[in-house]
Each structure stands twice: as structure tokens, then as C-alpha cells.
Amino acid sequence: MEETPEPVEPANLRFLRLLVTALTSVMMVGLVVVVALIVIRLNADGPTMPDQIVLPDGVSATALTIGQGWWAVVTDDNQILIYDQLTGALRQNVQIGQ
Image (cartoon, rainbow, N blue to C red; front, side, top):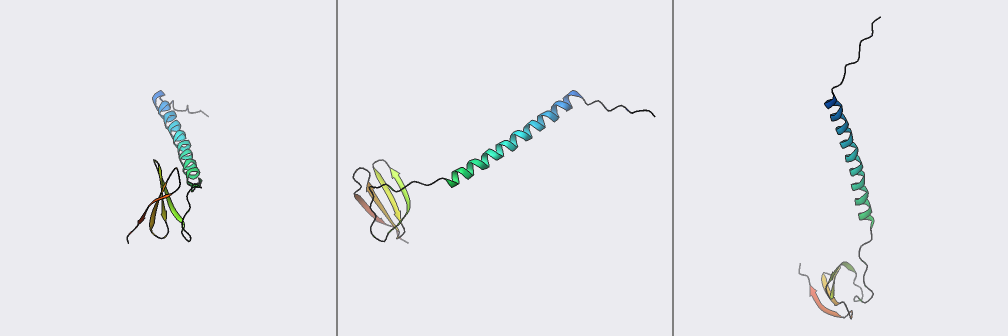
């Protein structure tokens, strides 16, 4: 019985197969890294309320913005309270219209 020789693969086809395999591997590693970074970012705690800020009774904060020399707190009763960053004193109270 006579054996048939295996076809010889051209060098440029072998190189192309190696490039495709390398690209696939890099893309899979990159996808895992991106998913891991998104999960880590979404599990991180947000900014904490500074100790100098005292909210009015019965009001809770829904958002906090930090500027140069001031803090703005959006409350659950549709107000924006702007506090001085050094003293913690209330500078301005803005009522949000609906």
C-alpha cells in the first residue's frame, strides 16, 4: 500500500494562520480585561458625604457635586443645597421646578 504525501503548506499561509491565532488570543485577553474593569468600576463606592455638611431634618442626598470652594447637594425633595467647602455653611438653596 502506497502512502500519499501530505500537502505542503505555503510559508505565507502558515504565517497568516499564526497572525490570526495571535489576534484571536489578544482579543480574548482584551475582552476579559475590559469586563473586569467594568465590574470593578461598577462595584466601587461613590463619593461620601463630607462631615462638614449637615442636611436639614427629613432630607436625604441623592447626588453630590464638588466644585472649587463649594459642595452642591441634590436632595430628594427637589432642592440643590450649595455649601461652603471651608466652613460647611449653607450658601444657597435652589428649588428645582417640576
